[in-house]
Length: 289
Length: 289
Image 1 (cartoon, one colour):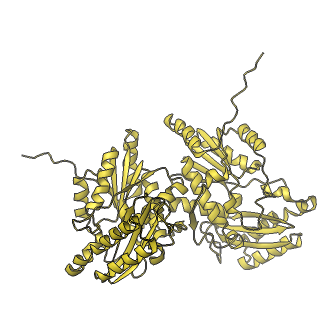
Image 2 (cartoon, rainbow over the protein chains, first blue to last red):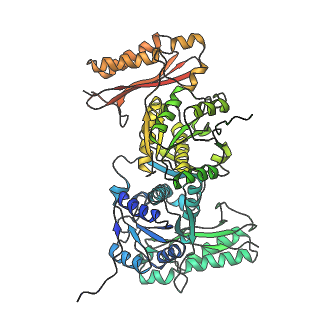
């Protein structure tokens, strides 16, 4: 005797089909949340889906490993891909539709248009990953305009990306609310990241030192240590814990990522560091006053 | 006794008010056409409005002299501005709403985002007006996303701009149909342009030579003259007629503006030339086969 299984989570591959499905929901008056991902989901992504399902009638998650945001020599080819597993996890979390386009669907022949944000993208990640943010802002503009959702969800783990995307959406009048979702961490403080899988067991044991370094730096700044000195101590602590190198560890204004001398407005300490062949990033809020 | 005057054409100054009005129309199921202009209207602009009113239930025209598309030393400050007169002409042509934002409304504090198209923008106008197309693509993206019209209308007079905007809208998945409208000309062939007002009477008498040069070049190519030779003859004729200099006069593929050796696909002859302190542009189709 057949049992009634729930309909499986639909996966669409084309913009036309994505829009057709979303139009049906719009005609029914549904609100729509968008969760762009590169797949290889962990609990951090699922927190984005959860935030979206709480605030919207329908949630669309996207899976697209965007080649344009990887630089030469970066980890595009080894970036983890496991769509079937990702789709199951999204389904359990209440996603209503998965959009998983091919590279050719996203960048058809003679694609020639780039969205770029100056200033915000030039320091921190931008200084260490040339072209990265142009790849991010271009693909996110496309995803936002393909879906025309009410809200789109991005993790605070990529804090600079969140600030850049928020500015871009405002500057281009993209009709969407950009929502940031707090970083999800392992019990020892390590921020969840698809790149954590690259770590050897020995590296995994060292990795939480990045979050500790950020936390100790933020606490030192709150306690009155001069910002430049606190940053230097934070970098030294991360290296002393066994990281191979520190690309940056810096306290910045939370809204425009400008260097600050004193915490007279909300601030953020952000860091990127290498552990063997893996590059990890993380950040933490420095409350104001 | 009071007579019933028709409601005057409404002018809105903010994106929020533009969207509020358009939402009302959307809720009524109306289709919407957008006609972006820099004001200083002539019959060429009104042909855009006419094309829009024919195909859409409601037509929104915009008036915005976009500083970002003028280079240093170009004619931003002297570009003609006459809003009241423009609005009357738009009203007579059946426009339903005028959007005339301030520079601060379009580019609020810390605006930092640019839309750019590579390749297509690098030759012809792009080679002679550095930064021009980035200004155009950025402001047009904004206008398209502010209005989210069904169709947007651009003149073939700015043919390269039309090709660039079409590519940009496709590449970024902007949900709009870009419609090109044929150039409107004076009886003597001069393409209508807001910049024709800069011409002295003597220059105005010379100006139609640009269109004649384009027409003769296209006819020579169709008759079998080698393209490079026809272009050279066209440039010589424009100079001989009294133009001060020719920035370019070139036969290109109509769809991607690449140089071509033979007309085995639709082509376009495009030109820009200076007449005293005024720079005029024009173009003409070269039918294929």
